Image (cartoon, rainbow, N blue to C red; front, top):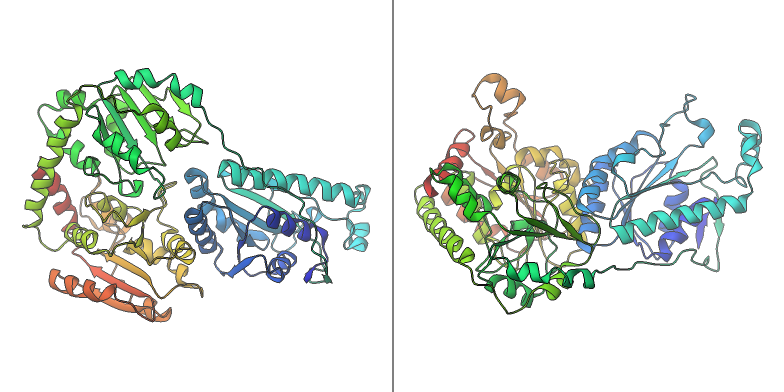
Length: 578
């Protein structure tokens, strides 16, 4: 087996193999050649080539999101590394184990005018779980070291290998145990392409030490408070499909003192749950009795688990009407989103719920009262749908009810993920979104990466700006024929028409809404996608019938909606159900 002659490259590869990190996304370059060669020559690894580093990082993030296991990205030196930053930040706030590996110039060539050099060490310092800055080998390119940096030769090669091994151990353990992104920076001196034959595989240098921590005893001490509370709110953010056992879901759903707020990204379903949070809260805001209604909704105990929440309305409500107790359940971290956190249970939600829940329910009308409100808005929503013209609102309703069973759905941020909260999808559909930083920059790349390691078809629902912004996501050879993209093209950043500040001026349209006349037609043809479009209700229904049919190529369906109508229809919906 061919491997790089540079020891640090082989140490990195050995460390990754011992930790079971198989997927390596490589962006072409020269400085990273020792690692590229060593990874691609080793049959243990599955390597992918993606030119655009920003897209490559989100591609890897999508894979790691699906598998809940570390996935690595590898780039050359210089500004290439900085293109990883949006995905690193997303991974940091979404607790996704993205492993960033960057090749670097030798330390003595930094800040001396050498090409493709920047200060790469600790470059992600504010958004990283661990930064491992490996040392330069001293038994490679010895003549260069003697000439340019003789002080480096004071260290022994064995001490360098020992240091690098320890740093890799810390970094990869952080990725696996803490589910956080990590950065491994590896300096290489030329020559970069020399190889050696390894006939007996190098012994794995690291061991997998992932462990779980539970607080069973601590949880039991909180059970009395839970049982005595008559108003308990469970709020679930981004949650991986099938994480919560069905019997626990049923126990929550059947408790009259509990209401469970979920979002599309929660991947939790039960007829007694409340999946459209804003449809509950928005009408209260508009009511003359808002103070009394909000106090009726205010929980004694707020129990949260899962990732970040989409709804700004629920955040504002819980910050104003804080619970007496706020418990968050997560093995790693707890955000004090509502400025009322009283306890962080560092365990899995299933274990917590098994310990706390029982069949002895507290008498309460909490669920019954708010379930009546839910049924009322659902009935009004159905009536509203019968009267609205073609718009984003109507499109998302049609999409939600026509997505085939067992699809994996990825939602782009901004309008797409917010409209999706208003309508129910089939329980078999799994939903994902980059909610860590809520950016539009990598939604398509994330969906493509996730689809590669998913056995079911993948659908991305995206706004126009998000799609065009990340169009390099289609520049690779890994897009499957069952990959589908739906673009809602409302000719600009439609969400800005909903937010305060919309005055329909030329400056607003240019600098906020960024109106345009672009179409995805030529992009789809360039990357080998079948292209369909829809511009009215009848064409949408017709195109959706064909869109999900099996095909030999991936497909894009672009839906054109009226730019200046969508915001009025959405806001009128909340007025109507109020």
